[in-house]
Image (cartoon, rainbow, N blue to C red):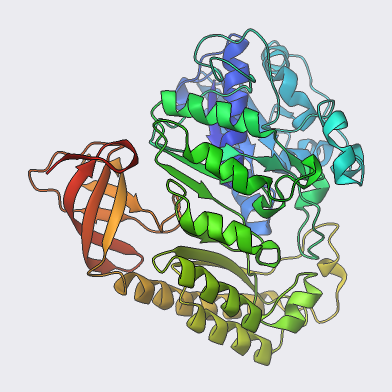
Length: 482
């Protein structure tokens, strides 16, 4: 069996759950799709470009069926979102499985391999599976299939924590950093986003379960956990404690052998002072702020059903940098939203210039099925949306390069991730995969994958940095040599 994962870090966690369940059910994970009897594609269904990538990947996988591969199966967000419609439009795929199939994924796949035809689900709004009131959800959530929240008894060794709660997980990527899901779903009603309809209402995982999984990850070589959810700032609201994230961060930072705890997907409107202070000042929690601004124009944000504007966002950034001057800050923005004027676009550009962000993702607006934005007046043409996206993306690329240049001469702590042709890692202000990297000029210094290295930045190459090491560090800051 081979798993292909598309989309965000949340999907990576879901893939490792699927791998754990499949291995517990008798399947063996192989590194190459051409060696697999079955290929599962964990799809992304967020925006049009991601959906196209998922379809293209599924079609490419079906070309392997002339060899050893007997079945190609779609799972993940696109599969859940479209179900039987996707199965009908893609007869090349052998099955389309939704989230409700995950608990028995091994059984489903065995039956598919034996020629049984799977009947795909008819999609439904998964928000309706749980009560509207967050506090009423915990007792019911256990009865609903929520990827990343499942548990199983009597798992084989190496799948899930050795003690405590038993979430199912089998590591696929053996690197020193791993995503760790703290919640699923979303209660926000952004007019452009369909995620709540197929991911469901917001559900927090219990802190004890998260900490147990973090300890298990450390046992498997992880030194950094990257906390993921659709909206991390809402963590704990369904458990009756809106400050639970701050306590969870402290508990994770205390896990032996875990050096970095990083949080993703923070909503600017929900950034309370206590959370900023915890992220900025807790030893072991990296001062990293993945803030979902989406735009800088107040009127555009109102149409997006979001809060804030350029002035309030800049105020938030000023407070973050007052507490943690070296903090890393990244964000995503959308260009070409319905009704966006040239003046709105100028506000966005000026905001990005003033914000001095370390990483910026720029997306062109696309209509998503079932969203309010798809019905709004003032729709721009695809050509105009793409022109605006390209214009802002060019600006963002220069701004990110400028931010990297400002770090030249500063000292950084680097987590080593590669040591093949070159020694490559990430500094504390850089999130996994999307925020740039650090190339270390190690010379004769010994630095292996998973080591933390103190280094001084000597050059910038776009978003990436070049640094000379000072010393390799043992867990949580002790010098190991040099």
